[in-house]
Image 1 (cartoon, helix red, strand yellow):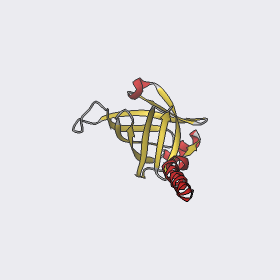
Image 2 (cartoon, one colour):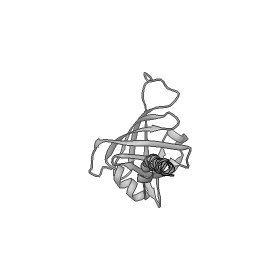
Image 3 (cartoon, rainbow, N blue to C red):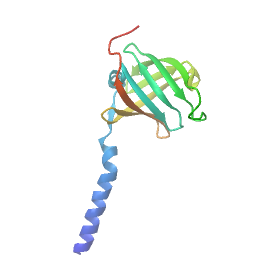
Image 4 (cartoon, rainbow, N blue to C red):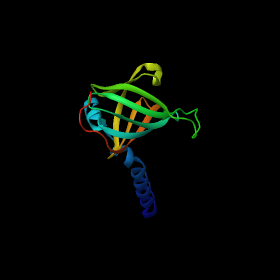
Length: 140
């Protein structure tokens, strides 16, 4: 009996250790997500293999330098510009080229301080990591 209690306790501790990071994630509102990222420079890595760096101003003007999943590590960076805005529980991004120029609206969670995930369902997501303080002043 004592051995089975230890096994159950060990299983519970193991389950908590695995679930702990997921439970620590905090869902952000669109406005909160916008405020956290505006003026920051961050790297991103998406589930489809697209990776790069981006930033945007408080007014929502965005820039990105990236490599698509199909590009090698030595491929030239592609560059894009776009707009970011908050809408309810989402942060919405419209790039000139990425996503075919269409707007995508995403939920954002804070995984830990300085690390975020934007997602559209469970199969399309990008992890964002703050690289340092960017221009905090409003630019037009």
